[in-house]
Image (cartoon, rainbow, N blue to C red; front, side, top):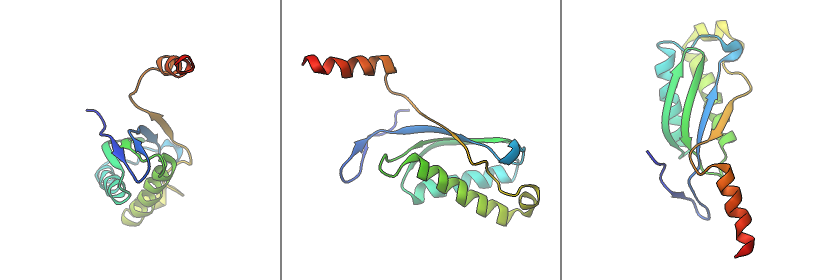
Length: 132
């Protein structure tokens, strides 16, 4: 599955990211029905922000999100929005979460770009442009 080429008013891009984030204290609280509701919230937020959700999977103590994100919007804004809205909604809808955790998510997360050529090839290509 290749990510589609996208564009906004002045940038054409293919930017896909693998994001992983965890509940506070890495507690195993993302179990049914929390996991399915969390997936819905992630889908809704990506759609509302017009970013391409490619996959989402929830484990008891962490979440994986594969998403295409406009570089002008920024992956940091997308993750902040997903974590903020999901924390608020899940803790409102499921009071047991509110009792167990002062806040749902840790402040940190992991993000990596996906696909593309190996760094060595890109570096070689960029350096070879001087000779043209």
